[in-house]
Image (tube, rainbow, N blue to C red; front, side, top):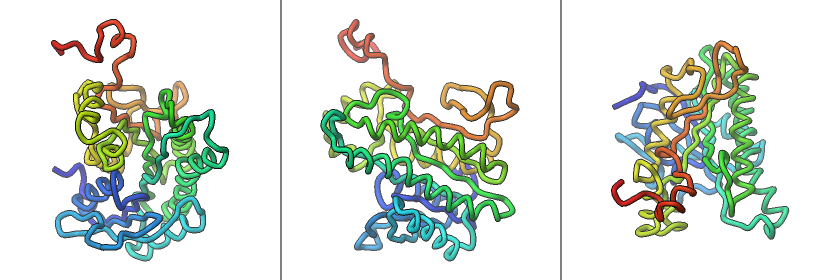
Length: 285
């Protein structure tokens, strides 16, 4: 079932050759969009590029930490599609590292990839979208690590918190032509998640801490992006709700232009309950 028809629209997804980004690409291809993905390296085999329904994503090599390469990425989409309707900044991540001993260069690189690079891409996308009659939509892929403590990935959590804030500021500056929103997932089932937590008991244990008893999938993130990029999200309601909190509107404002859509399966059960009950969830749950 399509949230909306994206036929004829040009979509750019950074880090779209694998994992969450590839899932997002498949979602937009299924909705009829033309999709361009990028990565620091291109897949050696084009058959490994995201595909759906007989359509496949185009791919260019780009390191979006470099503002010139970020600009060339957006210009490549214009050359391919004639326009850029949706840009999703998904490239990011960080290996675990203790904050006390990680090098200054490590911290700087993590923040550069997860915060500064999306700003480079957004600037270039906005320059194109502002000249289009119907503007465009920019979506940042954040993380719950930016909403709560992130031990072991402190710089990553700080960068994602900054990304959430960046989206609210850009939404105010670039409205009404360009909408800027943020999807904030918890752990998502990808190759890297399986490598970090184990494909069997480890991931099952993590899933057991989630109220919905499963880990998010790339398709879950894609569905959120399809919604936020669609006309269904053209005027987000103001105020918090059970599945999303909307930010960027001052008290008394008539509408919020930036939404942060939480995808966490109900959130994390408070640790004190596990301590009291002896497990994350009692057996009868």
